Amino acid sequence: MAEPARPFTPESLAEYWSCSAQHVRDLIRKGDLPAFRVGNLIRIRREDVVRYDQQQAEARERAAAQGALDVSQRPYTPEALAERWGCSHQHIRDMVRAGKLPAFRVGRLIRIRREDVEAFEQPATKGAPTEPPAPPRLPFVPPGLRKR
Image (cartoon, rainbow, N blue to C red; front, side):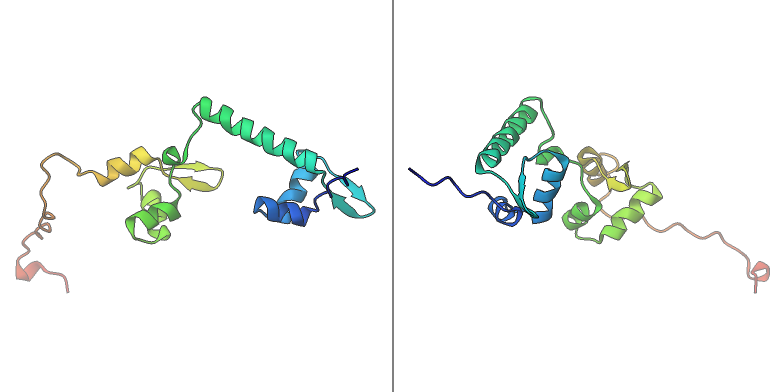
């Protein structure tokens, strides 16, 4: 008779899934992944891992069928947009704060829609000059009226 498969520990399952052991423990704590204890030790049956993997694959398929956002549709983070534009993420945040770049918040996180980035990257008008406009002229002030 074949010996039953040894159960996973949170650490061995984390290595198998390429995630952290804390993530595995969080799944167990939330009840998403069944587990049992041997004394103080947590163990996860292989059948439960296979079942969880199948449920996750089915959920991904359903999300894709319902038109869930794929990576190409996700909004930019300030860090990702800064990498694209070759500037600092703080510069992107400053542009958002100044109202030069439309953005929205998810909780405390700033997100920039891809459409807004593409619109920002386009010239303001068709046939826009390729050179920047000349600086504005200062008004003429006679020498006797200048402040000192």
